[in-house]
Length: 411
Image (cartoon, rainbow, N blue to C red):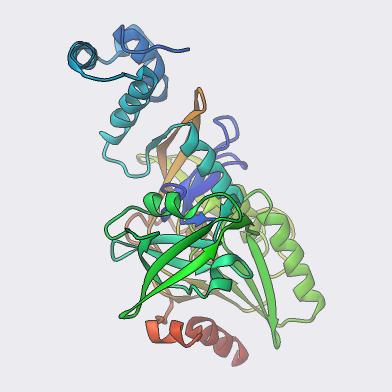
């Protein structure tokens, strides 16, 4: 795993993936979608299809080629019988998506050009016209995981844990996060009507879309405790987190809360930089293929927070790179984990440029904590379990943060 490898979850709108900006730069670990509420002619010969989808699967030599004669037969049959226009470019993308989906790995995804652009902009926080909220699935229902400060969603009155049931009158029940995000995004200055369930009450909000650029790091000081909140791990996260830590130290904080709740991941080198605030020359993650360790990543730089008692907040939407940081700080016993069990994203993805603006996000390995644990589907259990109820949310009470502050103030 190279230093520039990214770490994130599924798609730009879901929970946990590992992404690389390109193959040479590395791999990504990421999960929750930040929504901003924020001619090739194929199909005439099977070798043309192979030329498109083959490289992503190592199909380069003639002996390794898939027999795609059935795909060719399907195309010829469609061309002979279909009553309508056939866009062969779309067929090639569809074939690539189908080939990828057939692996049965939810973290291996083929993105068309539009999806690729959205994936990258979500990870970087430049989301475009939207409402300013993070969307994910809770109990199989699209839900607002977090409203971003001072953005349209918050200003309109939307809250964390609002379950989205309709957008502009169209039902969102049983829809994917991608479906919801596509509806929420649009031109700045336009209005979208969002119907949510808050507890058992149905409410509709009119939100005016705006240009959303979401910073990945926020910080606050509560008494003698510094609170460092990280929503994702992007190119700027490491430097922003260190600057925030330095400012907290200048104010004389005696302990720290690292809030990784609803953080779906991002670039692994950003996770490395954040862990380096507490750890000196320590392995934070191993990458393995089967039983073979193929790479390790260690902390660098000066651990300016290593002498401060620390509590890390996690929840069910803390994934991938967020879990790498939480797991490392926990394994080396420099932090107490508080909240709820994390998402459980223990695989590594890289993003490969497939040409024509299309990309393939493909699982290449599994990652392990310093103690050699792979948390895939299991997540990381907190040392102190503290849940948040809908009543707490509706009353504006962050009982998890308060529990962390109480623990540190008693230290």
